[in-house]
Image 1 (cartoon, rainbow, N blue to C red):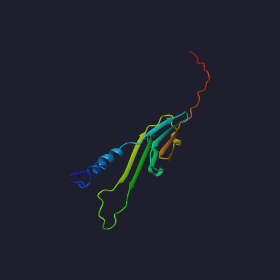
Image 2: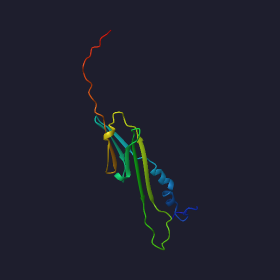
Image 3: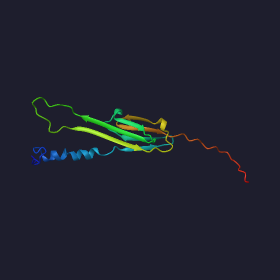
Image 4: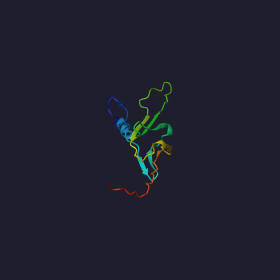
Length: 146
């Protein structure tokens, strides 16, 4: 058995337990932003955001007043179990809370009116079509020199 940590917080818990479940450990793991891929082809941009365990209800995707793409993600999980009567009180309960927001500047050729978003298999996909380019007229014009 490992020695107990002698401090005011749960002094009876073994040191490895405190080290592993220390709040600093969890804060660091939750502080990272999700991975994002951005694909481009002739017709569109596709943004993929890794969001394991998230559902479409956990996302909000919109354009702000400046026409920039804003992605918000928020997930709250709390175990609401109560100890049986006369069992005591919790010394530790595990909660999970994730929140993420990112604003992305869209390129000038993005067709903002037709952006779509879907969530499938833990990936948020945002489809941003490009404005169709009009081929320039290929006519010769003679400019008179005066």
